[in-house]
Amino acid sequence: MDKNNTKITSKGNPLTLIGTEIKVNDIAVDFSVLNNSFKEVKLSDFDGKVKILSLFPSIDTGVCSKQAHTFNSEASALSEDIVILAISNDLPFALNRFCGADGIKNIITLSDHKNLDFSAKYGFLIEELRLIARGVIVIDKDNIVRYVQYVPEITTEPDYQSALSVAKELV
Image (cartoon, rainbow, N blue to C red; front, side, top):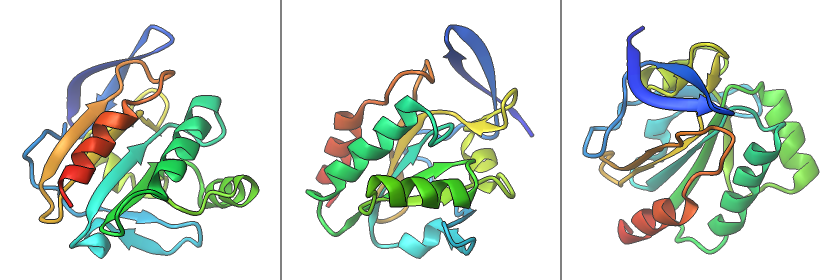
């Protein structure tokens, strides 16, 4: 896999991203991940909707949990034409447990652990950890990427409001 030139760190330590870096105005290529029941889900399953991809290393960490809760809370006020897909390399068991325990019902949690299909195609795979880097991507109804944030320091939260503003403008 190609190395991505985007610079990210964890507690100040540099990390290497692999996969193709995604950029604004790119066509969002289809990818396959697993839902909490281990069923395949593709980006194309959400054609015709604005898609916010909330990307994070592990649901079992404080910042990732806060990211899931923040997007879950924001989702309830969004148009039905917007869907939030929360993607990590956590096992579907862990995502299901977290959602059930924390009442997460407004976002769709998905796992890329099996084939790393999303990670490779969008350049979010952290080589050293085999985890997904923190970030947000907004894709319009025609599958054009309209917003990308690779969070430079993975222990910090993404810019929720910028991503949500872009998504709302696309409806």
